[in-house]
Image (tube, rainbow, N blue to C red; front, side):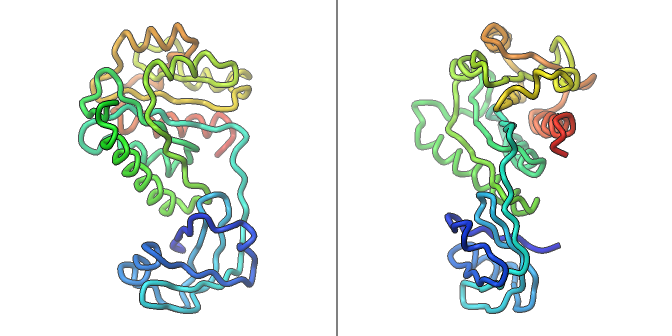
Length: 254
């Protein structure tokens, strides 16, 4: 399988068969020094915003390389976005959810400090929140390279429960709260015609201690759907990927 490298901000117009692209900076340094890239290898280069090209490495420098594109694709974003709202969790469980959901094709990721989150980014810890978002962004970027994605999902700023409630009240958005006490299954929800009418589908995943009843009640009253994935209770690291997989299948994205 070809390796994929990103050049952020590279215009789509630069991706044409026969064109040469230079990859420098950290991406080029990693390719040359860590991955030991060599002339003649066939790799992929993308801009993370929909354009991706494949071709042969024609030159290697100290911390850079050049590739001649042979095949180019410009992939559009889906008409309907799937957004993971992942509660902060201890250890690396939330990062594992970000990684796997990115590989499964989620379009955006939103951190959420739930009531029972052990990890706290907090409004009083703005610098910690910035570092957390930056770390999730790196995880999503690396997972996108692994999955050969043309689009790197956007990791947005953290939201509060109140902000999620306001989203749930929007007629153009569907907020799905995954909970063992859900009234119906996610597969039933996605089979409804109404599932295809929302521009964005937000999948809310609680922390390792589960959702607080007050959060479930507030989101439900605001218009969110409280749903069940299946008979078993999944970890915070696996519930999101499972939900994204079901949505991809039910909405015809896979």
